[in-house]
Each structure stands twice: as structure tokens, then as C-alpha cells.
Length: 253
Image 1 (cartoon, rainbow, N blue to C red):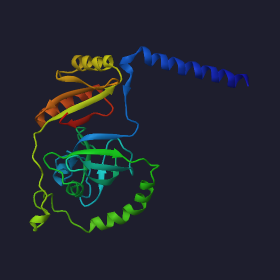
Image 2 (cartoon, rainbow, N blue to C red):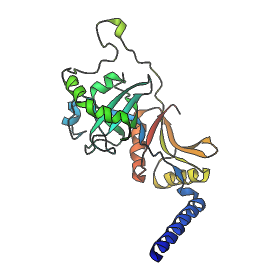
Image 3 (cartoon, one colour):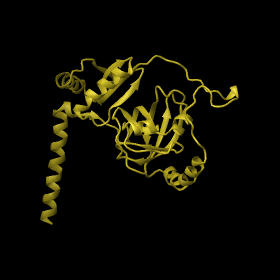
Image 4 (cartoon, rainbow, N blue to C red):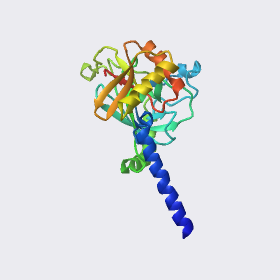
């Protein structure tokens, strides 16, 4: 009995110390999403990528499968094209495939076609679907059947401007200016955001970091904006040395 009381007292003291520590050290208090999501560019699979060792493993381009480097194998994700709000449900077939961290996932040509993605700018929203979701339980049962159907439909390549001979079926992508920013993190305090900006300046060669006030208790640290994908990739790769947990690429911010 005395031992249990002692453990309880120690636990309360530890939690109190942690709360006090957070209040007195604003630089450590940042906002993070419990549910994994990421907005950025996907890598559309092609055999040439495998041959050139840009990616370490093949994937069936007729399937609704993806590679991801953080989400567990056999998890389900919802992938959305922010340009037209089209979405599909895909399954993570592996999280041990090597590909550039600039991309938030490797997707198949079938997924790219169903979302009407621009092959030159495959920008997507990716959200992990909770295992407790009744949708996932239902989807897991039917996924193999859908996969078998998909395997009967060959994929010759992505044709965005004309998906068929009938002009009524044509899907045209609206051209827009290339303008993206790199989201580092959201913070509760402005001081925390400023500390992060200072760290970026001190530990990297990146100088275009900014703080955007979203509300009284939410400050976002961004890099950019970038109007060229090469500059965007360069800054993204340079910021990797700081080992941030979930860097996102935001459009027109």
C-alpha cells in the first residue's frame, strides 16, 4: 500500500514538473497533429525510375497501392487532388522503399489518372485513415477484389488532356502559376516561432524563412515562397539536416 502511494506521489510530481517546464520553455511548445497527414508532391511510378535507381522497388501501375516511408504497411490512406477535390483510397504496400524524401509518397499511374493529376506537378493531400474506422474494416475485406479487377485493366501511361476519343470526356488541367512554400511547423507562441527561424538561419544557408500569424495562439514558420521546383527541392533537401518530423509543402500561401 505504501509503495502504491509513493508511486502516485512521484507520478503527480513528474507531471507537474512537465507542465511547468512547458510553460517556462516556450521554444519547446509547438502544435502537432495526432492524425498523420501531409501535403506535398507525390512521385508517380515508372519503370525507368527503378532502372535509374531513383526508387528501389517496383510497384504495379494498375493498382491502388502506394509506397510511404513513415506509415505502416497495410495501412489505408485517402489521397486527394486539391485542384479538383478528386480523391481515392489507397493501401500502403511498403514503408521500406528508398526514394527521395522530397516526395511524400510513391503512387501508381492509375491513382494519378483517377485524380487527374498534372504529371509535371503531382501535388496531393495524403491523410492516414484510422484503424478504428469502420470504413477501413470494410475496405480491407474488399480491397483484394478491387485489386483483381484493376489488374485486368492495363495502364499504358497518363493521358491528361485526352482520356478517350470522345471530346466530351476530355479533362483539362487549369494552368496556374507555380508558387509553393515549405511549412516547418506551427507554434503556440510567437517567441517559439522566432527561435525556430533563428535556428534555421544559424544551422543552414536558408535565409527566406518567415513567420505567418494564423491566430492569437498559432504561428506558422514557412520557407519561401518558391516559383521554381528546383529551388524548392534544394531548400527542402537542405532543411532535412534539422530532422523535422513532418515537413509539408503548401500551395499559394
